[in-house]
Image (cartoon, rainbow, N blue to C red; front, side):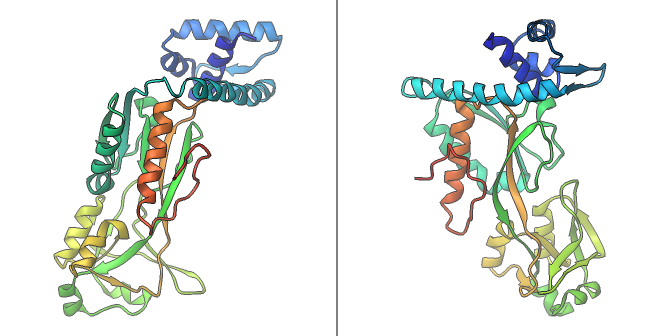
Length: 309
């Protein structure tokens, strides 16, 4: 077995193209294409359906990938264990995360991580835009939503709840809603984006009730929605962790707490790989450990290689 050709095949599958595999491996597209053709010739079976626009696994290719994928992981894990004590963890991580999460949390977390691993560098972008991790060469994508992109390995970090809230001044002028139906008679600051549904969904103990708020102001930024609500423009709904400081200072008052809103997940996605480089491993573990420091955070989907001790 030529492990180089096997690794190239795995990269083609995981990257979804010869171009992506070549870029990931630091080779030319022609070299990768030739090596895959040699692999198919030696095996006597076609592994990939090739068209001008896409690649698809044949039935034999799918079965072969499932076998070699685990072999490559085992080999890489063995290498990591063999050289863990001597290996220098280094490299760059290109990270994209939501603006509000970056401003409130990740500045300190990234700084602590880089102090621990001085040979790693981080290029961080704070953005609420839709990101194509593979095409843009992003290493880690944080989102307040789930990802359905099969090219990615997505870890669900924790659930975050959303809360309806308004300023004391607004409630003094317009009254406090007692039921979800009362929201139809109130002003709203609506938070809506490509990843955020602008409707408000609450549970009354029996069923979910969806309210479509009429808003004088619609924004795609959590901080802007929070600040407009503090100013008394209307009721808004933002993640509790983003608004907690304003709630603690009584700048915003939580509403309809007997009618919980649907939770959303905070996720961390990386490109799907046959094996996980150590810079990814230590970063993922560091993030889980940082999140676990808050006893109110109930972590989800903790990878086997992560130790919280």
